[in-house]
Amino acid sequence: MWGSRETFGESPATGVWVQGSVESRLFVWRLQFYAQVQERGERSVEAWNALFERYKKEYPSEGEEIERMFSHKLRPEVLETLKTLGEKAKEKADSTRAHSGRMLLGIKDFMPELIGGSADLTGSNCTDLKEPSFQVANRSGRYIHFGVREHAMIAMANGLYHFGCMRPFCATFLNFVTYGWGAVRLAALSKCGVLVVATHDSIELGQDGPTHQPIEVLALCRATPNLIAIRPADGTEVAGAYAVWLRDELKRVTVLSLCRSSVPVLQGSSFDGVIKGAYVLSDFENNGKKKVVIAGSGSEVHFCVEAKKLLTNNWDVRLVSMPCWTLFDEQPAEYRNQVLCLSERRQGKVLTAYVEAASPFGECTRVSLRFTASRPENGLLP
Image (tube, rainbow, N blue to C red):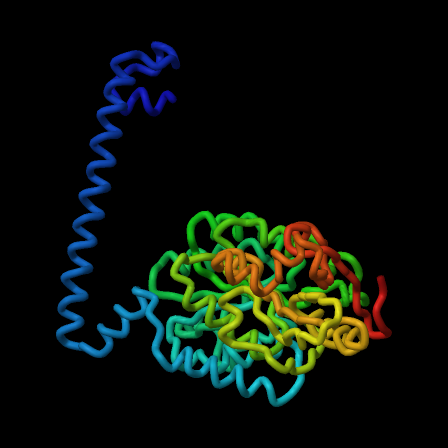
C-alpha cells in the first residue's frame, strides 16, 4: 500500500487509507494500462497476420496445412484409416485399450497436430506413439511423459488445445481421472475438445484393490455437460469412438473408457453406430415369445450376447450396444423409442435390462432392470 501511494504522488506517512484522489487516479491508470495492453495485443496480431501472409506466399502448401490444423479440419485419410482399422479389428479378440493404441498409431502420420501422452502409464494405457518423445533435446517430439500428475496433465492438454492448432490426448486409468477432475471440468466449461484415454475401466481389476476400481466415475462423466463418455465394446466401436472425438463440432471433452482384459469380436458391431450412442446389435426374431431388450456397454456387452443364447428357449431377445448415453440422448425421440422399445416398455409389452460393471445411477430412466457385477479372472460375482 505504501508503494502504491508513492507511485501516485501521495506521502506514505499520511496513513494507509485510500483517499479519493488516489482512488480516482488509480481508476484512470487502470484504464490507460488496459488500453495499452489491448493496443499492444492488436499490434502483435497484425504483425503475426502479416508474417503469416508472407509465409503462405513463400510456402503455400505448408501455409495451407497450418490453416487446416487451426480450423480443426481432418485429412480424409484419418477417417478412412479409422474405418479400415475398425474392420481389421474384427479379425481377432483383444482389449479395447489395445485397439485404442492401434488407432493412435494408425492416424498419427496423417495428423501432425496430434500430441499427447500418459501420466506414467504408457504401457498400461497403450498410448505409445513409437517415436522419439518430447524432451528438452527434442522439441519436435509429440509424445509427452507427463509423470504421475493427472491434474497437471489434463490442464496442459487444455492449454495445448487452446493454442489452436493441436489435437491433444492424455491418458490414465479411469479411476484416476478423478485426480484431475478440476482440469476435466474446466475443459468442459472451456469447450476444450481433448481426448482422455481412460483404461482399466471396470471393477474386474480386482488384484489392485478399490483404489483402482471405478464405481461412480462413469456416472460422474455422464452427468457433466460438454463431456462425452464413450465405452466401446470391441475394436470396431473403438474406431468409431475416435471418429466421434475428431468430428465433434461442439468441442466437447471425450473420455474414452477402455477395458484391460480381452473382449471377443462382436457380430454386428458398428463403426457408424457409435455416433448414435446406441444401436441394435442383434434383433428380435419375432417368434411370438415374450420380448426383452438387453442393453449394455463396454466389456459387458459380450455377456449380453451370452445371455441371449441362454434365454432363446423362452424369450425373444434384442441386444443393444450402448457405448455413449449422451450421444443416444441427442438422437431423435423416434430413434430412441425404436432402439429401446420405450413405448412398448411403458405398456408392459417388453422388458428391458441394462448390464454394466459400475454404479447404476442414472439408468432408471432407460430400463426396467439393472445388473452390475465385477468380473475377476475366476468368474462372475454379484
